[in-house]
Amino acid sequence: MSTPESYVITLAALSLPLLAGNPPEEAVEFRGAHYQLITETTDWRSAKERCEKMGGRLVCVHNKKVQEFVARMAGGKRVWIGLTDQVTEGVWTWVDGTPLKFSAWGDQQPDSAHDDEDFVNLRPDGTWNDAILTGPSEQLRVLGFICEWPASAEKAAKEKKKK
Image 1 (cartoon, rainbow, N blue to C red):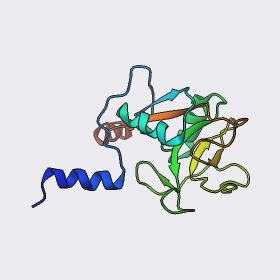
Image 2 (cartoon, helix red, strand yellow):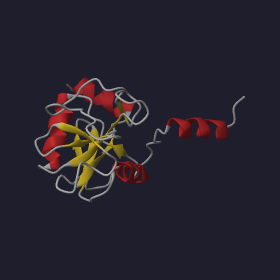
Image 3 (cartoon, helix red, strand yellow):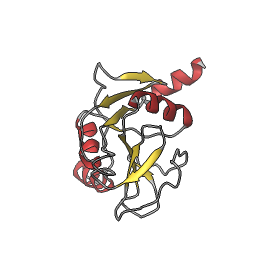
Image 4 (cartoon, rainbow, N blue to C red):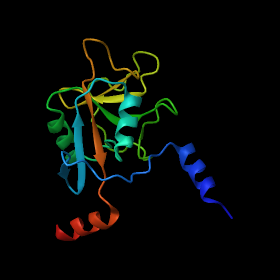
């Protein structure tokens, strides 16, 4: 029989955050989940860790409605989202462990123009760009990131019944 410690090791090996926190009061609710734009220049990994410390995760954009909402929230800023192909080049995975199905890549993206373009940011025009850990370049600096606190399964089911 497995001990709780073995579960922790297994979860840590998957690098999936345990979402236990409530969203901050400043977070905006959309379709049962909560989102917050953090306007802070940082690399993708630090942005991911910051969201997790707040009890959330970097935003996972699974459909067009969330894409449109996140693009409006970003307000024309270049921001990190929770998509990466760091584990296997060309296999894009969200930080929640799900594979990429919906996408909003910009023209000629993803291009891996530089080695290790494994992290995705939302461009000012709302499309996606793959970039290195620290961002595309000094002129194209990533100016923030969006954290997400997903709706609980119970709350999501209630929301679905209302529609």
